[in-house]
Length: 441
Image (cartoon, rainbow, N blue to C red; front, side, top):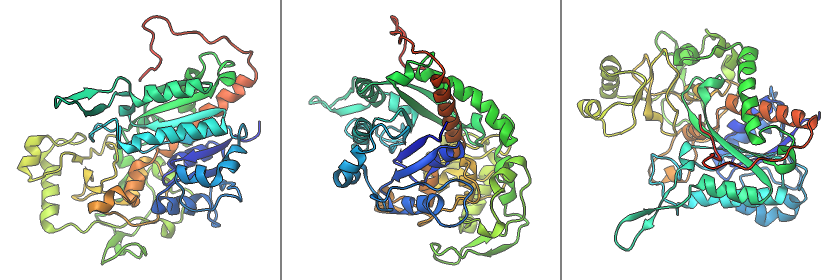
């Protein structure tokens, strides 16, 4: 079977693209509107340097620059229409903030409307397989605008339900499950809603339709861990103990996007199977984003007290936050013997398990499953009003799909298409009374 071709919408820095590429799929192009995130994508999927993955094919008609979906459809509608039935997989992880339980989760959040644009691209290209990734909150009905009486009504359907119905009307069978990335070789507890859509002709040749893809994903999970030489659980220490600062030499951070007298640790060598996997195609001097935060003595003392006194691996409770003078609601001191908590876009959400400091971008990337050869571009972080408009390195990492979860998805899709090629068509069964359209694990 020839390589499956895929397009990545809402690509970010390329976590899902990397996973699908590692699974042997062939990237065509990617759409990402943020300049910094696209710069990272370009450096890792289009650069002339030696890469351990195949470069994206990239069509001549599409400039290698940041694009929004609106701009793609407005400027290249004819070319996009020419891709109809030529693309095997359309992947996309629209921004999740509008669905996150950490936000206001309003139905009218403009970020939620990006799913309408996603559906428009689907209807134009008509790929064989759809892959979406989002936070579990996408399946919960959002708050509607305030009612005249001052209350807040609830939307009748979640955005997942609305999108599923729209895609089914286009001729796709759709199924979603909540998966934990830590089961797929990622050293991080990260639950995400994965949605698979199959065109009905393809779904008709699989026993269970899109549900069969998730069964194959579970089969591929064991195969993937075995092939990568990984155990069932990868702890934070397994992932980043070789990046610890204590006892390591330091050098000035020479990254052109780092302003001021920052330092980074001099890298020695990988110590665990996971670290050897991450560092395998990288020379030590090529590993970027190692810049250490400049904590004041007061902050270091506070972090040290938290690590000494507070329970590891769980979010600090209100009493602990008040005792240590913290206003932030989400602070996790990592446990060294467990997978890390969910890596977010904010660098001070997670404390290192052994050292009184926040994580570097590279450490956060390791916990997401980005290999050390993967380079990040743009500012390290940003703040104030720019936080909602820019995508610096910490944000790129926090928003990304863990690549090895993406790899398992790509392998399962490939196996499903191969299986369907040798199977007769089936008659889709209608859900019985009380039978759910979506299962969650």
